[in-house]
Every structure is written in C-alpha cells, then in structure tokens.
Length: 224
Ligand SMILES: Cc1ncsc1CCOP(=O)(O)O
Ligand SMILES: C=C1C=NC(C)=NC1=N
Ligand SMILES: [Mg+2]
Image 1 (tube, rainbow, N blue to C red):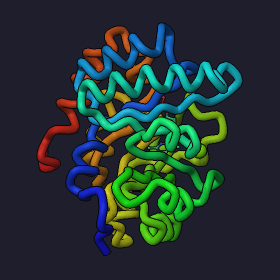
Image 2 (cartoon, rainbow, N blue to C red; image 1 turned 180 degrees about the horizontal axis):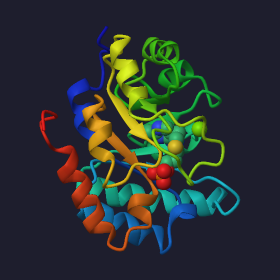
Image 3 (cartoon, rainbow, N blue to C red; image 1 turned 90 degrees about the horizontal axis):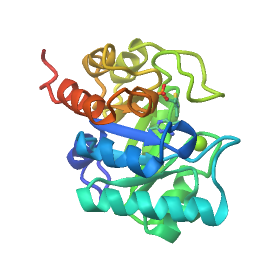
Image 4 (tube, rainbow, N blue to C red; image 1 turned 180 degrees about the vertical axis):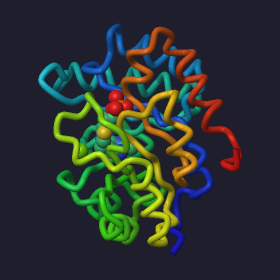
C-alpha cells in the first residue's frame, strides 16, 4: 500500500545519513555541530532534545528554530522527535514518535499528508501498524549497543533488519543504535535504506569528516 503524500523514494534518499542530536549529545555548540554535519553531507536531521540536560520552553524553541534554519539553507529535512506541538509550531518537515509517544495516527492527522512521519518499530507487527497509521519510515534498533538512549530495548544486530525484510516489510527502514563508520555497511547490507547516527557524528574528532564518510558508505548501490 503506497501512501499518497511524501514520495517513498524521496524518503529513502533522505534516510541515508539521518543525523540525530540534541544539546545533550553535543560537546560544543549544537549549532556548530549541525553546521559541520550538514557540510559533511547528512541527508536528514532529527532534533531530539531529551534528558536531564535538555533545554525546555523558550530555550528549546529558539535552538530548534536556529537548527531548522540551517537545515532549510541546505535543503535537508528537519524532523522533530516526540514533540508534535513544537513540530507544528515550527512547521517542521516531520515528526518521529516511539511506541510510547503520541499515537502515529494522531500525528499523521495533525500534520497532514505531506509531512514526514517516522515511527520506532521493534516487531513486524509494530511496523505493519505504523504503515497503517501513515508512517513514511520506521526506525529499527538498537542494532548495536548504544550509550545515547537510556531506555533502549535489547540489541537486535543487523539480523533485526533482515527479519523485517523477510517478513515482507517494504516500508523505508533506517537502522539506529551504536552505528559507527566500521559497522554501518552491515546495516545497509541487511536491507536498511539508511543509518541513523548520534554519537559517531557528535563525538567524532572531525564531525564533517565523519558525516562525509557515512555518506560515502551508504551511497553504494547496496551490492558491494
Ligand atoms: C535514539 C535511539 N533509538 C534507539 S538507539 C538510539 C540512540 C542512538 O545513538 P547512537 O548513534 O549514539 O548509538
Ligand atoms: C528512537 C528513535 C528511533 N529511530 C529514529 C529514526 N529516531 C528515534 N528517535
Ligand atoms: Mg520518543
């Protein structure tokens, strides 16, 4: 079932190097982090301001506006994690929700057909439900152990993505969790359309170089 709205090939292309960050993930000013990541060629950005050090209220809104403007100057989609009201207030390009967040069907209803809706899915059933709710892609993970999400579920390995594809899930999939320059190729070979990365970019010696290398690794035609 193909959804009328965001073209799925455009979504697949946007998922290739899907950078996620909030100020809690950054060792320097988040604006400078995103500038370098964009220069390195990330294909989509998710603003995920979460945890005890996260900004809130006006501070969070101002930071989001600055990061959104940067993405717009590069023509890179700007996605908001969890916070539907913030996404609507900013007219963001989309929202990503987990199973415990706002219902995906409600988010789709509130955003309209042309915004990007991402849903975290841990089983093929959750993936099928997400598709029925109008999701454009699913986030599957953690693929490898991660330090960036306190309540991450059990590690799946790249097999987790193979299983989704074997159960007939054709929706665009982005792998997430502990993905580095050394293991990203395994995620692509398992059938993901892209990799979602926090610390391998935010903690990199060169943020721009790291983003550039992820872009190179994920641009293969999937055969190599
Ligand atoms: C948000 C999220 N969801 C599953 S793992 C994770 C964190 C990924 O961060 P990192 O790329 O640093 O492992
Ligand atoms: C938990 C998540 C899973 N997948 C993606 C793409 N983003 C998230 N915040
Ligand atoms: Mg969430």
